[in-house]
Amino acid sequence: MAYIDPITGQVIGENVTPNITQQTLNNTQGATQGAGPFTEYLRRLGLGGGGYWNPAQRYQASLYDPMRTLFQQEQTFAPLTGGIPGGGYWGDFMGQYLNQPRAVAQRAGGVLGSLFGATPGQRGELGLGFEPAYGEAGQDIDTGEGMSTLQALIAQALRPQWGAYGGARFAQQLPQMQQQWQLSPQQTFLDYIKNKYGLGGMFPQYGAVPNPQPTDLTQ
Image (tube, rainbow, N blue to C red; front, top):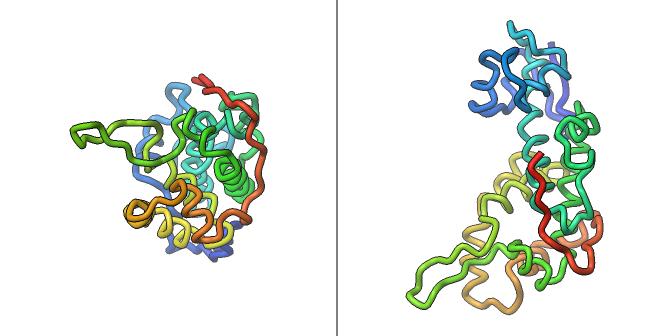
C-alpha cells in the first residue's frame, strides 16, 4: 500500500519507512500503560492497543514528534504569539492538529513569523535573541533559549516551502551562519538571517504583543 506525505508530496510505499525517531518508537513499548502524551496520541489514533503497524499507521505515529515539538515551542513563544491553541492543554491542542501535518508546519511558520516580527528589545527581554554572550573572562553566559530551539522551529516552519530535507539542512547550518554574523554584527542575528535569506515575508505573523511577559505554562 502506498500513500502520499501531505506536506512534501512524497510517495511512501511498503518498503519506505517514514521518519520517526527512535525515542518515539521506544515509547510504543507498553503504550497501553500510563497516560503520557504519546500514549494519549496513540489512543486518539486508535493505535493504543499495540501490535503490528502497517506503513500508513507508522506514518501517523511519526507525526507525533513534530506536533509535540510545536506544542513545546508554543509554550516558549506564547508571549509573542498571543497564546497557545487549545489554551495550553495538550489534549485540546492535539485535537486541533491531529492528522494535519500541514497545519502543524503552517502554525510553526506563524510562530517563526511572530519571532521575526518582534523588536530586538522584546526578544531580549524574553531570552529569545539566540545570540551568544560572554562574561568578562570570556566564558559563555546562558542568556535564554539555546540554538537547538531555533533550529527545530525553523526546520519545521520551512518544511512546506523547502521540504523536510531543505528545512532541516538550513537549520543545521544556523551555527555557521551565526559565526559569519559575528564577524560584522550590524543587526541582530535573527534580523540577519531574516534579511539575508529572505525569510521575513515567507510566514504569517500572529502579532507580537506590545510588552510581552514570560509565560509559565507547564501543561
